[in-house]
Amino acid sequence: MSEIPFVLAQQEKDCMSFNTETPPNPIVDSYKESAFFPEIHAYVTTNARVREDGDFWIEFNTMAGERLSGMEMYINRFTNVEEGLQFLKKLQRVSENLIGFIEKNHLKQAPKD
Image (cartoon, rainbow, N blue to C red; front, side, top):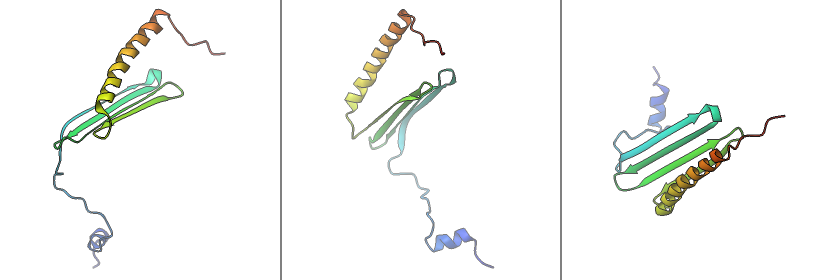
């Protein structure tokens, strides 16, 4: 009887085998959140992880509107983390001010023809 194709391929090194050991720098903290807003055709996702050795990465993605205007932001140890943090803080302040402006002036979409 012939051997199972997977076993044969493994013996001939024609397939990848996966290491089942714990990676040397496991993830020690993570933050993941997403929100989908179907009524306004928008979503936001965040994904952040920190490894035991201090390595980290942060992903922030948004898409909004019927024509999908998007924004992506990536922060890791090769980027200017302080600059990214300041941007997020200022983005929060500016977006709060913009919301106030839109609501104060009762801005609305023009009627569709």
